[in-house]
Length: 317
Image (cartoon, rainbow, N blue to C red; front, side):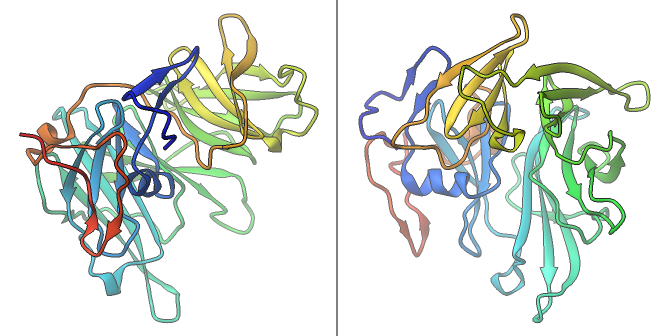
C-alpha cells in the first residue's frame, strides 16, 4: 500500500513487492490468508459479504460467490480454504462455520463447498466436530486444519484434514508437539516445531506409508547477531522457492537449507508488517476459472468500502 510503488511490482534480492488497495488488502490480511497456486481466497469481513479470488501478481480479482449464510445465522468463527481436487483437476472452496445460539453457545457446525465455476454453495454431509479450527493449509489434495486443546488432558497440536476428492473430514496423525505450526514444503504437509531452544525443526509427512513424519531440517537460531531471545520471538512464515522464511521482530529472515545460513531478506523499519504469509507466484486468472467478470485493481486509486461492498476498479473489456 506504499504510494511509491508506481509499478505493478518491484523485485528485491529476496522479495517481490506489490501494492494493493486498502480494502482489498485489509480483507485478506484480517481474513484467512488462504492461498493456492498463486491465488488468494478471502471473504469480505462484513456480514453477508462475498467470496473473492485475487491474483496479487496480475492484480486480477473476481467475486466468485455471495454469502451462503444469512446475516442472522453468521457465527463468529469461520474458516475458508481454497485448493485443487486432484481427482477431477478442478478447484474447490471449502467454508466451515460454527453456528451459535443467542447465549453464544455453539449449536452446530456447517460445512459447504463451492465448485469451480459454480456460484452457489452446497452443504456436505461430512462436518467437523464443534471445535475451533486453525488457519488451513493446502497440501497433497487435502485441506489441513490445526486443532489445539481437544480435551483437558491434551493441549498439544492435532490435525483435522479434509479430502477434496472424497469430501470427508478425517484426523491426521502427527507428532505430539506443544508449539508447532502447519506448513507446506515442496507440496507435502509439514510441521514447524518451535518448542526447542536452540533450533526450529521442520518435519514433513509422507503420503504413502501410513502418514509417517520425517525431520527435514533443523534451523539453527544463530540469526545474524540479533537473536538473543527465546523462540517465542520467531515466527515461521513459509517457503519461498528453496528457502524457508521466518519473521523476527518485524524483520523477515531467510534460511537456505543448501548452505545452512540464515540472513535478512528485509529488515524491520518504520512501517512494520501487520500480517505475513507465503504464496507461490502464477498467472492463473480467477475470472477464467470461475467464468465471471474480470476486474483489474488500479495501482494508485484509493478505494472505499461502501454499502454495496468493495469497489474494485474498472471492468476490463
